[in-house]
Image 1 (tube, rainbow, N blue to C red):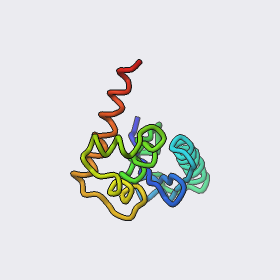
Image 2: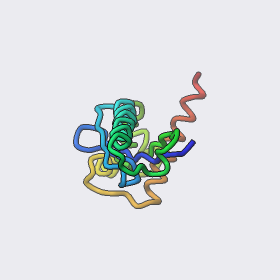
Image 3: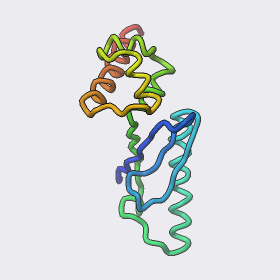
Length: 134
């Protein structure tokens, strides 16, 4: 089964998704991460069916069964995490001040790759510790 990378970002007030392969001109939006994930898969399936009907060439990874792999930008990660983790808690975990996290979440600034990893690892670390409560 082919793995298809789907990029997810936070755009204005919605999540937006598009396949990394730009040969597939397909996008979707949703208020929630779950909504946009479902919407982009449905949009891609619909697009592929249309391509087949019209005899258009279909990229190799879409010719048989495929599985979406969702890759979130830092902005999308922060917006999704807002439902579960306060920015204050994330700030304590990462050492990045809350205002800076807000700049990243609102798209005013783009974190460097090392900072992106700190944010991702901070969210994961908090998540792991929360699972210990159960």
